[in-house]
Length: 635
Image (cartoon, rainbow, N blue to C red):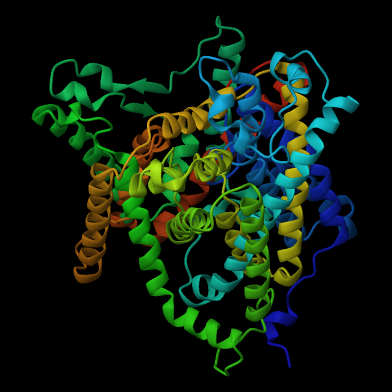
């Protein structure tokens, strides 16, 4: 007999799927247009996508009308959350650091090869024609613009590579959703991780009571009003605006303090709202570790260490921290994983699977099949077995670390720029030992490992958490989320190619990064980078020490997750709003307890919602008239 909690789950309706599908083209086109064509807003570079929240807001406003005049047609909470998750999962895979970055690579080598850079003799023989477009005639419109993708020659040139990458990314996303199934019970039901990122969309679907809060509308007024005024100032400079972006780094002109560099002070209401959702320990840790990174820069200037290339190697320190955090998360989960393993091999235990989206044995077999497709893609592309295993082992370590960060503490971003598997493997072994074919494969995989802001697994696990809170049938939701990813990829490919042939040369810096790295690896073969490994080891040790202090001493508030988080470029735009949120929340909790926090929470949710609404309106207006509009978010 089924668990009672399973019987109460609401099935996903055909209506919600159709509404979600109808929402995808505009949302994905908005993402591609704003992020790569206009290089503004960047919806998919933060943990919560403002365009998905705006889609949910439109549904919830429509639901108020339906509840009053057509109550039989009103949307249930499960339906609205299903649409939100479909938009989110489709946008993340077509985001800035997955599909878009990959598309900037596929034709780059052929178009930008010259006798001077010698790319043709260096690595062209290692590029299979089924993963890249090598026909320069078909690429002319793509890089020169004022052309049309929907011509038979252009479609033929791109059809095979796009189909192969569609299969690759679909399999990779499916492997992550199977991992999410395996971890779901431990992280959601047993540890009851908080998943702060889903609080706003969940509250928006709880009913009209959410919108009756006076504090909510004050918050919406602050966020929406600020962006409306600054947007009008952007269009008509005669209208005064409110400056919200400053840089105090310019105030320090003398050594050694001028080494701190750019130190932004951004005053976005949505960022204060995100900081307010974060646990106090994490928000404190974030701005403290941000200052720690600045202190390293000053120390380097005082000692001369800043003269060594790459100092302070934020990438390697952060990589070490993420490795430590991933293995710590797996250690915390090891008892559950052991029970899962026994279920897979058929041994009986007390692990209840009645509430799971799919049985653990099925999830494991599906995971193996999807990984086999990913590995087969790379083997066929010419990469070595050990190169593939090393690359994706590191990749999944990072994905698991980011997923745990989002689930436990609601980190606002997961920026990790140019420090992925290919960089770590070349640091460990040197490019000489890896081989030209595998290095060429690394360059084509660079698109989705250049940064880690567009990885679907955190969103997938958040989807299962929303399913639990919203009583959604997670067995059906699993396939809806994966189907949304596949359809999102397909729409994203078409949207990007349409924009490419229309505007020309969009996002070419990402392709340049990939092949400049490849050129350097092949022309100046490197050995083991011991300096890089030293900073990596420092990151591991500092993270483990911080973890130990947190476990042993109750008074220790610094959280190790903040160490790598605060070092990334994105967080430089968030540290001051997070600091403000920490100050406000600390005062509220100290003097009013948790009740004061809950009473004021609608104000900060409203500040987020107000900026997300107005930011989406400006973006849609820009799409309709074909011009760049005001951007409330600059990272």
